[in-house]
Image (tube, rainbow, N blue to C red; front, side, top):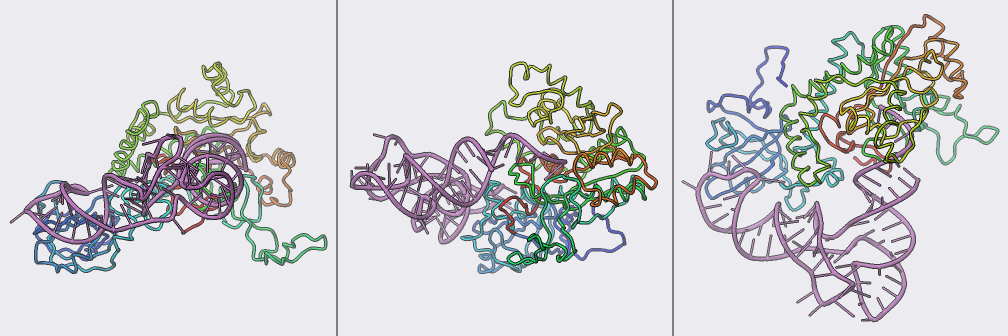
Amino acid sequence: MPLLRPFPFKMPESFMQIKEILGLTPTQQSIVVKGWVRTKRVSSSVAFIAINDGSTIHNIQAVVSEGTVSEETLKLVTTGSCIAVTGKLIASQGQGQSVEVEVVSIEVYGTADPEKYPLQPKKHSLEFLREIAHLRPRTNTFSAILRIRHALAYAIHTYFNNNGFFYLHTPIITGSDAEGAGEMFRVTTLDPINPPLTEEGKVDYKEDFFGKETNLTVSGQLEGELGAMALSKVYTFGPTFRAENSNTTRHLAEFWMIEPEVAFYELADNMNLAEDFTKFCIKYALDNCADDIAFLEKRLIEEEKNKKKEEQSEMTLSEKLRFVTENEFERLTYTEAIDILLNSKAHKNGKFVYPVEWGIDLQSEHERYLVEKHFKKPVILTNYPKDIKAFYMKLDEDGKTVRAMDVLFPGIGEIIGGSQREDDYAKLLQRTKEVGIEEESIWWYLETRQFGSAPHAGFGLGFERLVLFVTGMSNIRDVIPFPRTPKTAEF
RNA sequence: UCCUUCUUAGCUCAGUUGGUUAGAGCACAUGACUGUUAAUCAUGGGGUCCCUGGUUCGAGCCCAGGAGAGGGAGCCA
């Protein structure tokens, strides 16, 4: 990413980041480098210090000639310590970097006892790094992931802004559990030992902070729809919470979700939006995070060497990303997908653990077969049976299926779930009753269908699943700085 | 929540049918080396074998219970 400064303001050299310094032409200009020491190599007359400040995957090399820095100071410069180096920017005599800093002086901001500092210059397992999440951003792998995560967040806002969407801030504390998207986290200020009770002996939430039961949101969609009924094109991008006891590489208790909602969009428009949007974001990362993606790609190739041949992927990370941006997503209905599965060799040979028939909720093995074996690219499945989908999805003419769509990605599974929403008041009311949602709890949602109702559609994208795909990582706990999962809320 | 695998040095792991003083690589420390690229070479220090209980003359290894972690599944984004 090029650094864009809005006004003609020259950064003082003492505040330049390493990314910027590495791009300068060396003219022996004086320079200050501030960052954390990655490695130090000492020989009798010269020492080399590799410094990183997180602005780029690349380190800058500081060269200390004999006699310039006291031995006591140099001794404090260890892996993990934080230093400020003052010196001259010169062309490097060695291979591997074009510029380096000829050191005049070093100030040690913070030492790091090498006997105790856990991140020593060697390979560490991702499991170990998860235990030291407060330090793992200092590794190449995690700094690369965090920079890509940032770039994707920026790309998301850019895409929507460029396409006439407004960023709508939906509430994080919610009084409705209407969507039924999952178990919720209770929000309360009541005394858990001695709560106020009703006459029937139940907890009296009228006494609670909000005067009713409240939870952390599982989705901003319903409020997003309210916004779309006024601003036409809106999106949310915020934290979302699920109290499900899921222990998988694809689920978090706290994650970030993007939910566009658009008035006058029907299912086909929604699919176009989902495809165009994901392609834009991935392309943005490819164009702007080339160094970080190249680093992660190299890391993956190393990792795959230890795998069996059949488990190794056919494409490198960047090939996989380019493949997605350059090919059409395959679009088919649920019913067509069931036919493909029924006619598959896997089904005929009894390879599927779960049986296939019209009406089932597709299992991971079925989705994987469609995406990874049959089509070998992202797939959009539409028009699912109404019984396995949410109450707010628009009923098809046949009365059996709804205008739902799931976007399935290789390796990740469902990355997007969306639908055209039911805009007919009577039908929506009917569905809420069928599913057992109390009318009073979402009166405000139902009312939008009575006052100027309009066809509209939207979807939800799990941000971490997108980051997972772009970084090529395999565990969702490694693409969020501080993961929240069952039994884990450290840091 | 279910299935399954694992837990031995700071990290990654080996440890034979139960048998003396538990090993390796990396990391770290010290020394050597005139420019290194996670430098190289030499030497050295470093252990609650996850916890509790049991079997046994004897347990890192066998048994029971517990805790934590990984992978898969379900639920989903």
